[in-house]
Image (cartoon, rainbow, N blue to C red):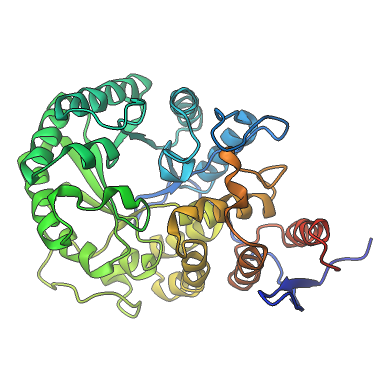
Length: 403
């Protein structure tokens, strides 16, 4: 069979075009964990291809492929953020599967010597509306289970709390009570409405500045229990504003899949687009906890390795071209970004079929996927370009497109 050298692309009007297939970028694995930034890839789950992973059905997970991807991330020096939004919490990953995922992922982290954090939520409670006290109890149940597995907890934003809270004080009370029960420092997650519209008004206000006041107060009152905060508002200026107000020892983990290049680079990469920073602040960059890094594992690692070596130009050269791809994967409706993450995993050979639990692989159109292929090819995110081309062309053919 002759070597593939061209990629066929599909436009929204049904027309096709072709571009040259780029070579694999040839990045190298680091000798150990990355040093200049703490970086987590928020990983997805791979379904069993023969199972009934249809909307509303319990998740049936291909554990070999799911856990192999976590080993892959560790081998590139990244940490893994598991059982979070990218793993389809509240969008297909049921409570039983969530517990299994946390158990198994924590075990893999121990085997690989990797760093894993996992989502702590209230989503095992089936009732749509519960009391503030019940929210606290539900959080604590998942928190203690996570701690028992030896994983780092990420206190996710709770739909139950968003519905039950009537004032900012309700948020302060719940977080104060849950954090007081933690035996290890946790990461707080502020998830914006682009990712989950049910969280509108979280921390007591639809104005991010007012909500940020509550968040910063919660952290300040419980600084010894908070390892960091992940902000997923897709607002770089808001992230920098909060970052500069965090107490010593509390990290800012960017969850901004639109603006991560400048936020992670910070003062070390002044030429990267980023909001104005306070030069007197001790907080001059963000660390990372990104779903985008699950789609860009090797590229993200290579870029941070460049920062480790003090080469900011190389960091920009590697990572800056990926932001257009990430913005497309996370385009509105943003909560369907999981489709793009799984699609990239399939193209790169990390799963046998392009599937997601809950049938979520159908959430993006074929032209949308074509644009992912085009941008991934352009930015060096295709780890095995010929395999990616073969799989993409096969998907086009199955959908009636001549290749």
